[in-house]
Image 1 (cartoon, rainbow, N blue to C red):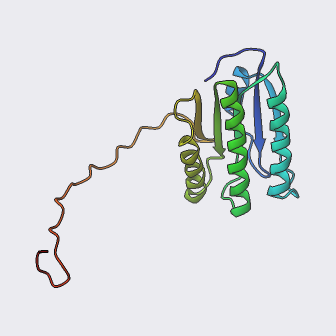
Image 2 (image 1 turned 30 degrees about the vertical axis):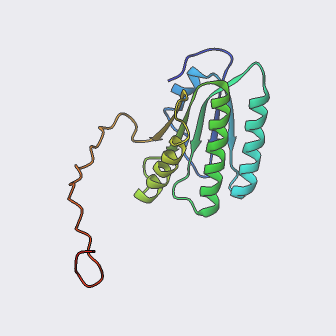
Length: 175
């Protein structure tokens, strides 16, 4: 979690139909100046995305404020335009936080999402993390109803096999 100062800002983005996470107050305490942008039910992902990007740019231009927390709350499984919008918004939030030196982006679901929706959020988090090397910006995935610390999963050890011998097209060893 980030430090609590009066010059820190949080930006919360709510997709239409998304649930307000109960744990969100934890983040707002550490970055008390909040901007909340909610998508109207009738608003397309493209128009909503442009509106959010405009607000993020406005927040970035404030000299006395630093964006330290970004929260993107999804409504669940997203179609292609929604996934494109999420990616653009998450990257814009990360860029603003990286410019200020640190921050935390939280990708959130409501906990009742199916596996496909969860995989979408984890996939987005993974692609975002590839760009964060050497920064003090974190990406987290949280769910409204099932939040907390989960044990790490260790992948199974890979079996290393010797490389097969090289043979030409008729099965004989090359000359």
